[in-house]
Length: 327
Image 1 (tube, rainbow, N blue to C red):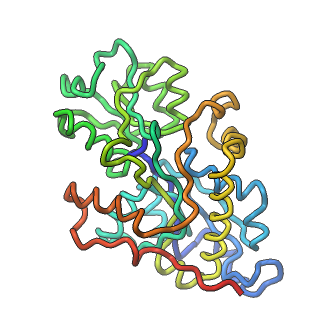
Image 2 (cartoon, helix red, strand yellow; image 1 turned 30 degrees about the horizontal axis):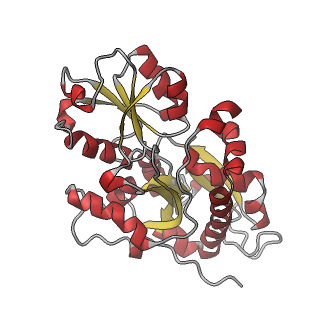
């Protein structure tokens, strides 16, 4: 699910926060470091992408910053956006395609607070099972084959469509079936779908069930493509700049540790990704960026512009949250 990646709320980010009404507004309170809110709700999903977020929680990094993070499961990045817009989430993990489309369509006024994950070889794989009639991508065109994606209109689907089109298969030639990533390996095994656009650790799970790679969609124009990150709303960061900055600093710390030590990522995966230690040791990892750079994320916007999904003048830089200096 490289192009698939993504689906995380991030993926994540916001305002309002009705769920938190009873715990917020302790500016200057003891132990909060003067944060505007001492507790935030973050949308997330059981993907490798969010391993640093779980590392930060389990190691107490947010607590050190005076911030309590409550996680709320979402099916994908696109699913977190309405929750962000209506204030149910303060921050959400999500893929960049869903975030940029939401911004362009004025569903919300986005503010990106942290980068999250970047593709590497083998990050976004479309898998199939031997003997189901799909041996190559062009076989998807015959008989309206069913292809699983976690959500529509995200980076995962965009990369898959790009790979299909280069092989003569158009989106209307297949039937997209939306399902959570954790359900895809079993759906392939049962024959419910003939292909599934997946991310780790579910790629490794599918491999253990006998699934094979149909195509790696994080290659060519999508090689090393940024996948997902964490965002809130403009309103949230304007009203809570110290809280947003604390979240950003903690994530930078955790992203750095994840990027430097694979073992730390392996150790945290079984606690939230519904995989065992054996599978965690086998998963292929992408890149955990440690800085928030407009130039890198603009690549995603340019890919979307090439596919007619964004206007030519869409710029990522104004969407980045720049934390105020730390006192």
